Length: 181
Image (tube, rainbow, N blue to C red; front, side):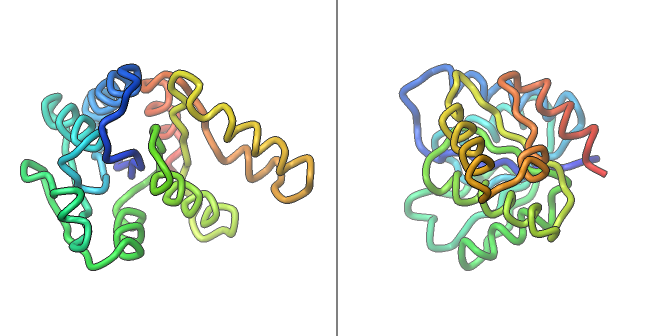
């Protein structure tokens, strides 16, 4: 069974479109027999994703951080929960458990995780597929930024082409699964 590490926000959001897409994304992971690997939180968008995946019969692995337990209580209903000491260990554990990476809407922490996985791919540290769920145009400005970095010579089209972008959760899950090896 393939597994996908998903980076997303642990907060509740104002735009209900993000919550609906996150719920559908979890259902699609289960439908396509793909294990969810995520930050292990029982709050916000992370909770929506884990609950939707579990309700649809999917497996969910959480990787929580001891120091975040006050802000992001670990989900207690997961298939498996790892608790690590810090955020660096969390990202490393998620990467080790996953066949690919997908980023859903989130904040600064989500972007930090996304950029680290993208940087690792650009440096050749992994060849796992990377996806970005661009719900309601959330990542449009980031994609324009990538275009600018290519124009200015800080990034190249080969690196940019490693990123699969879709607004539809099922299309993105299928694309990542088909490229995982």
